[in-house]
Amino acid sequence: MSRTPDWIARRVHHSDAARLADLVGDPARFVADDLSQRVSLFTTAIDPVRLVDPDELWDDALSRGLRAPGFRLVRDGDTLPRASVTRAAGIGNETVSDVIQPNKVLELFDSGASVVLQGLHFTNPALARLATNLALDLDQPVQINAYLSPASTRGLDLHFDFHDVLVVQLSGSKRWRAWDRLERTATPVRGAPETHAPTLDEVGEARFERVLEAGDCLHVPRGCPHSPETVDEASAHLTIGIMSFTRRRLVEQALTRAVGEPATSTLVPPGGLGGVGKGGEAQLSAAATGAESALGLLATRLAGPALRRQLAIEVWRRQPVTRLRSRVPVEAPGDALLAVTPGPLVWAEREVDDVVLGLGDRQLRMPAEAWPLLYRLLDARCESFTIDAVAQSLRRQLDSESVRTVVERLIAEGVVAHATV
Image (tube, rainbow, N blue to C red; front, side):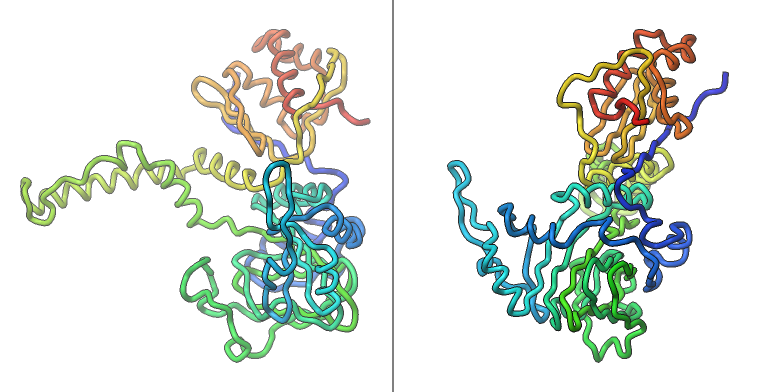
């Protein structure tokens, strides 16, 4: 019998939320030709009503006790002081100082300030599902903010972002200008001296200029200067940040995991500079050999299976949890039709003694004997199943009671549920 691979992942999108294709048309072409490469406009995008209603965003912001940094106000390029739009409030036996003052926000909006709602993928269920779908399509972390702007105003100054952005116009219109990357912003690193905001004299003539209408989707690569402003009507748009999971981040994470292992924690021999020891050159040679060993360990952390797991963990730890554990016991008769639920990427990896199951916000370990069953259920060809049918097909590898135990655990974790017909 052939051995199954040691890794499998299952993507089940939320059917009631948009996907990348709804925003950019052809996802493969977008990834190949546009992502992180060029400013591009997609005018046949999704009906914005399917994403979120701007009135709903306003209602949530003003009536649900929103707290900073979940929001901020910007006007003419400046972020207004947090204290000007927040107040102190008692919660239990503690006092917090960052609760929104809704009428103050409306007053400042009327005087030309834009309201920026931040981290909506964590607070708005519909946008959480959208972020999950986009992360499933892109294998990159995704964040979602919204900008609610009055007519004929400028919120942010000319600037660039450290990640790619998809701008989706929800209502009204907004004028956008964008420029090619400057040499110093080609691969921007947050905090580096050369990443100060560009000036209009520095960028010259805009490469892209367009008024976005409801339903338009604009892609702005990281490092590309851009400047938005409303025209003669109020505007609401989403900014979907594709969070640029870079090679640098991969190396940093791999190095962090390698620290503390013998190859990286062995002492550099004394005497390399001519002090007490066997002699400078010999000690330097020994230090170099040890460093090469540490680099070899780092290389293994960046090789196939280890890198794949690192990517899965790093992307999905930053995403909202849109798949929940069952709050009440779920009965699953042997002939009940079951299916994997939508939500964050589900992945399984076979190790020597057990199986690691990744669920987005957490990882579980299961006995190695569960691998054939997990592989079967996470195969994309398995759209639905019954416990009885799976137990019958795996009878030579796993007894029926073990099949039921594993499936019931998956049901309890929210990974499997009764299939919708």
